[in-house]
Length: 145
Length: 145
Length: 111
Length: 111
Ligand SMILES: Nc1ncnc2c1ncn2[C@@H]1O[C@H](COP(=O)(O)OP(=O)(O)O)[C@@H](O)[C@H]1O
Ligand SMILES: Nc1ncnc2c1ncn2[C@@H]1O[C@H](COP(=O)(O)OP(=O)(O)O)[C@@H](O)[C@H]1O
Image (tube, rainbow over the protein chains, first blue to last red):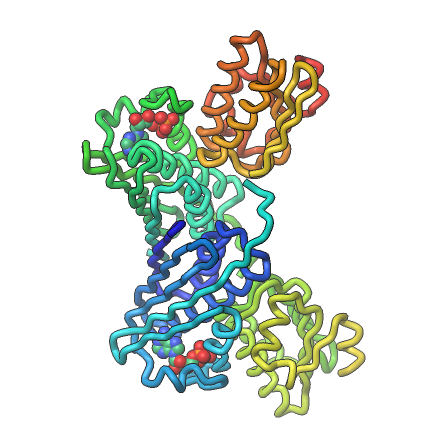
């Protein structure tokens, strides 16, 4: 393992952008392309937003974000202790949302899957949800030190 | 309390810049000036570097960084479970360093004190060290949303 | 995010600068609503040339405005998407329901 | 950090871009040492115009080079400090032992 991080933040909407910056800064140690960084930021944004909106329904709760850097990849876990997901299979379908009245598009998981190399969702009703994601970072000539 | 964060990272020198970015991004929620941000970054850099170099002596160890945002200030705690400081009073003196052979300047605590509004150091031999710092963020007209 | 909203006749021009996520999309929705409440207008043109990040909350708020304005016989169009925004726009299927252009003139000419 | 080091006659010109902290100061020290090991030179001029961050590890590595070069009768000077770097430079007392200038020409003329 090259490096790891663990971040705990409350489920406030202003922490969505904070979480994106933190994971992007951490991932930058693998010298990713701007495109890889922006894909990681987008996926993190989706998972953290889901914890804020769905898991805790705008009530106060804790979000835990773990990151691990390996030679060629970043592994990210985003955990909440919120309401959990009834059916993960349904939740992952494009356009499926339980909050259409809040103008949710139901595309969060679809975007995570599109932008990351692996997305795993573990959830238990009334216990919480963990989203595990992996992004492969492709090697380039490293001109910096 | 407006917000809080807790970050855990291993004591690797590449995490010095990561820690600076994380605390700066968190502090930016109070809409500080660029100068206030750069002072916070500098102080965080000093405390995290001390944990990497002195507390764990380049061996693996955990560094915990806590941040709390209040209306007009950020409170930062940087904790290690390393060797601890024999005499905090001596350690805080300008130019005092136990590692001159590593080209340490002995100015870390002096800079933390100069750049932050309050610096408190709690340390116990063989238990570890906690540096608590406070920076007042002065109110400005906020043109962003 | 900085949201600049101007209306002229039947068109609202909203310029978004920064990041459109769940946190900031609420302000965007509210600012459009304020204009719809006070002025006779039905088309929304969104300038994304200085928007450097969007996630699916952005898709939701844009679709929400489309549904709202369609009822009045209006349209929603966007122009000036940067690469991350364009990728999310396509991934979310917005390209099938929202006309998008490179430049402001093209969007306005197609109203 | 990007470190560009060139030597010409009695002078090494080191241009630092990025952040000079504990992590990056080791690379800076090593690059200067490589030149000192192979070339007959004794003065070090540091271009800080693209250095946007420095902490007390930077003070340590600069003082370390000063002590090393003084033994050979050499000098260390810096130019082009940005505001954060200048503040740390003063807070660390480097202004009392290291001549500093706005522009490269001034530094070189004072060698
Ligand atoms: N962390 C979570 N906790 C509880 N429910 C969740 C969580 N994440 C997702 N869900 C459920 O899965 C559904 C689909 O999620 P997603 O694809 O991100 O779309 P959206 O957020 O737009 O609804 C959500 O509507 C919600 O019911
Ligand atoms: N986290 C820590 N753990 C153990 N010792 C520490 C720690 N922080 C500081 N010290 C001690 O205090 C001294 C002074 O620290 P500082 O003013 O930052 O200067 P420097 O890091 O350049 O030595 C250090 O040399 C070290 O002996």
